Length: 246
Ligand SMILES: NC(=O)c1ccc[n+]([C@@H]2O[C@H](COP(=O)([O-])OP(=O)(O)OC[C@H]3O[C@@H](n4cnc5c(N)ncnc54)[C@H](O)[C@@H]3O)[C@@H](O)[C@H]2O)c1
Image 1 (tube, rainbow, N blue to C red):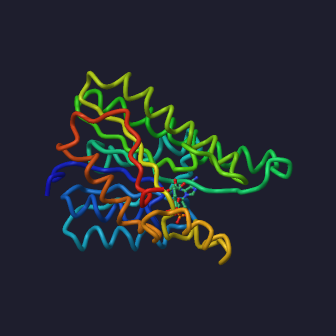
Image 2: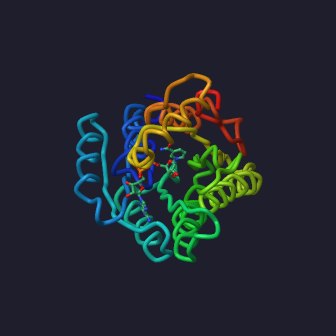
Image 3: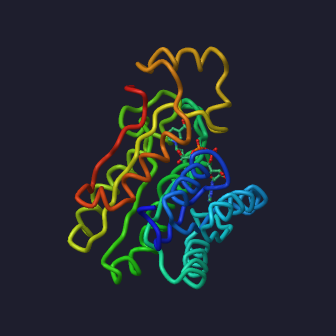
């Protein structure tokens, strides 16, 4: 129960990796502020029930994290409900894959706004209370694609590469104030995001994973729990791969 008394805000936590992170941090003793888009509110409330079943407090706040006003309202609601935010996990994300010549402006803007701008907006919004508390943990869910690139995902790779550069920069800005900022770069994790791949694509991907299996949301959540805990207090500005050796 290394995180008892702490409050964690996890964006995009109605399902997939975000849901696993919320549950894992609750197991560590944290109270959890859950976020997702309004269309996912039913699933979000179900995750809130899972957190409460672990005897932790849960608050579900719907907001589109790519929108400045919605992020401001979300953070105000969490502060009003819980009084503080100690841990931010920027997890919300989407893909809009297309080869570059077929990629529309909308595909580009949607991914940059939801996967990258949201990380800036949420980080800026929680930093003031964290700076006051002189303690904070920010964990950004990037991707292996942001490190190595991937054909058909130039928008996603640019956004996730941006998240990594943002992580390293903000880590340096706030390091002296007891706040760490790290990124996790998952490889191929079994969620709705990857279930859209056809059999051939999935088989090709599996061949590139030295461990020979896809990862689970729980594998990513374990890494978040470590980086959010006291044991990681001297680790900042890092990118931790959770990718089976990819
Ligand atoms: N699944 C993988 O293999 C994989 C690999 C590397 C990185 N990631 C990253 O992990 C994170 C979680 O992905 P996942 O696989 O669980 O996908 P997912 O699609 O299952 O979950 C993403 C969640 O984010 C929410 N979301 C989308 N737009 C939002 C917005 N504007 N505001 C708030 N919430 C929003 C969705 O509603 C959904 O609940 C993403 O950042 C993704 O890029 C996933």
